[in-house]
Amino acid sequence: MSLTTGAVSAFVGGRDVKHPVLQVIDIKRIEANSAAGTKERFRLVVSDGQYYQKAMLSTQLNGLISAQQLKTNSIVTLTEYICNDVQGRRIVIILSLQINQSNSAKIGNPQNIETANQNSSAATMAPGNQVKMEQPRVHQQPQVNQQSYGGGYQGNGPVVRQQHMTKPMQGGQGMSNNMHILPIRALNPYQNKWTIKGRVTSKAGIRTWDKGPNNQGKLFSCEIVDAEGTELRMTFFRDAVDKYYEMLQQDKVFTFSGGQVKMANKQYNTTNNDYEVTFGGNAEVYPVENDNTIAKISLNPVPIASLDPGSMTHADILGVVSEHSEIQEFTSKAGRPLTKVDLTIADNSGSSVRVAFWGDKGREIHEKLSNAPPNQIIGVKNCKISDYNGCSLSTMNTSNIFIDPELPQTSVVRQWLSGGGLSGVQSKSQSAGGGGNRGPKGVQDRHTTKSLTEYRLGTGEKPDYVDIKGTITYIKRENMWYPACPEEGVNKKVVQQPDGSWFCEQTNKSYPHCEYRYIMSCVVSDSSGSQWVTCFNETGQQLLGRSADDLARLKEENESLFDQALMEANFSEYIFTLRVKEEMNNDETRLRCSMIRCTPIDWTTENRQLIAAIENFA
Image 1 (cartoon, rainbow, N blue to C red):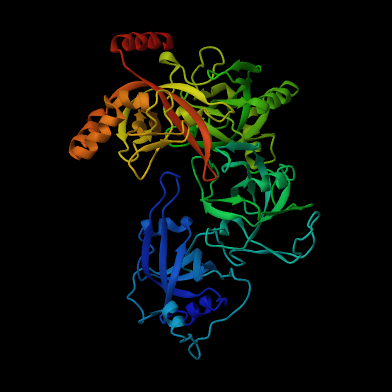
Image 2: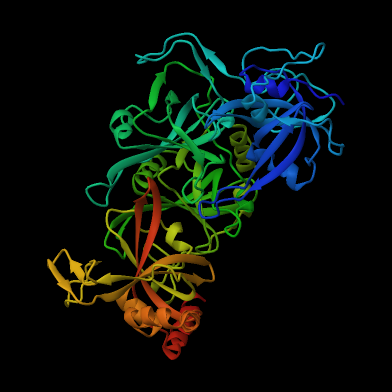
């Protein structure tokens, strides 16, 4: 199969090529960021037989490489792509492609187009092989027999459609009336300028942080959906909060530009998108009036019978309300007032599940159900899945509630209900067995590392304090201590002077020596997962059995004995009391856990409590 000679030169020159045929001559894997829950990516080198250049593969196409359908020397047709300037280089972002031939020999002896340009030997297209240039930059591909991948492309028509907006929109002062709208699924971190359009499906409240005079700010997050049904989480920081928080109302449509695209942090991002967007002072948001191209209901319900806390973290559901509780008001262990309403929801999969509606969402759904006939059909978007009481769900700030939504699934559930479907329902949630206290029940009302995020601990104005039974599985050996003022009760960091003394700003004194104090990081693990925890001086001494001064001296004198001391502290089991609080770090939200104390386990007492808990559960 012939390659589209001159296509690479056209890419670099800023010209467009209609569905070019290229050869993939190299594939390089870029490691995933496991801490942020992001996917691995692949960087390709594509050739037209004359020149080659770098390209990035959309993460939705990663499966082609793992399935060995896309290999080195494969010949492909680019059915969707975007060319972007990244740090002075032209990069091709492949959104969708069609594999023409998986196994092929390398065609030609292509040269690096960047080297060719640097030598001022501009590439020209061979006579008779000129490629067709046209706008826009995201192209249209007629249907062929080969298999297409990515973008959900079916048949004729534009693969990625950039909507051309020529009419001014209300409130659009300073906004171009000649705007190209990019589908959300075409966004990627390598684009500099873009405009997307979407309907706001949820908006969280404003959150603030204050970590000193140079690290203060506020933020809020919202989620949108576009005409193709693609979701996106967006976070606005500082000045953008003041400018757009009141403007962005749920169910309204807006255009967005001036943000930064980055890999989604799956610890907090529950959309099905691999990317998310942050906005600062350069954000531009404009309302779009009377736009019916984007559905008002964005719901992808899963059968309740398929809910699995072991493999799923979030889900949308749609079903019949078979039971609902009264409004429950109580106080958390951290002293925060809480409000909750429990609903039991069943669907045509023959199963039901208990859903906890927190705060204003609980009051809202209670009022609506109290004034409506029984067995209302409701949809809930973005529920948190927990293994508490077998399987249960709870709403979050980004959850949406739809009463009798206009969806095909609603008719199916209604028909199932009219046929007596509720009579044979099996519950996935065990009996709660008591009052409305938040969190898992068990020995001394302990939590697990997994339940710290499941129950949204640390998200209030004040920190939460919890007990966890766990094991130290790793101690970070770097930066385990800091030099502190030796005066009793001061504990402030001191700075070594040129003469070897140590100066403390708080006492305004110099000292011949300092006192090292622990500020170390370790991993606490239990049966549900693991969590990074910060230990300070008292708990550090208890875990390691020696002072930070002694351990620092040991590291300097004999590093092998130092490593042995850390190993001896590993795999010790304690009851940990943790302080849990969400904090901002580099404009990202992190769950920070600090160890208040660690208590050795008294196994006689522990076994008595476990037996009593089992008997109460039975």
